[in-house]
Amino acid sequence: MSAVECAPLVENDRVLVIACGMLAREILAVKELNQLDHLDLTCLPADFHFHPDRIASAMDAAIMEARARGYRHIFAGYADCGTGGMLDRVLERHGVERMAGAHCFAFYQGNDAFEASGDRDMLAFYMTDFLCRQFDAFFIRPLGLDRHPELVKDYFGNYEKLVYLAQTEDPSLEAVAQQAADFLGLAYERRVTGYGDLLPALTAAARAVS
Image (tube, rainbow, N blue to C red; front, side, top):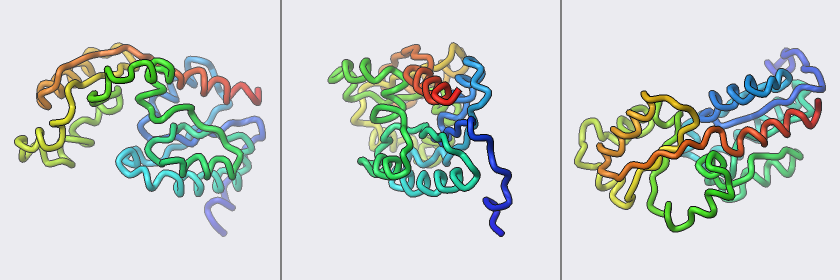
């Protein structure tokens, strides 16, 4: 008997969000802020951010496992995230909706605001609260910049500025973003976005069954 078969079935009024691991803290914050007690969360690996070709198949498997456990209401805590429509094809087959937009950098700002930024942000390197917390683990060490800082221009030479999209007011995270901009040789800009479109999307998904 499989682990899924052994797992207890869930109540029909619960909503499962299957999300990018980069959004876990923010989704839990929205859940608490809006008292969405019937919302459950499971996450796919955060490093799929760098491997978008893995997202669709992993989501497909996660949805099938959730259905086997009895979840009728599922929401995808992803935008397209570089899948080129592959994720949408999986979600359409399962009748599951996702966050609107191209990626989290868009829906944190609000998709309309992101579209309006246009050429202004064409050469922007975005960071979020998560990426500030994981800057060394996601960028410095994997790219070898701790050992070979001279490679910074090879990796980041086409960017002009670092834009920190701040979900929270946290001076320690802002310090990381500023230091990252200095290290990468980029101009620095901070935008307080809060949770952007994530908040109304999750609230609507959770309340659709309440």
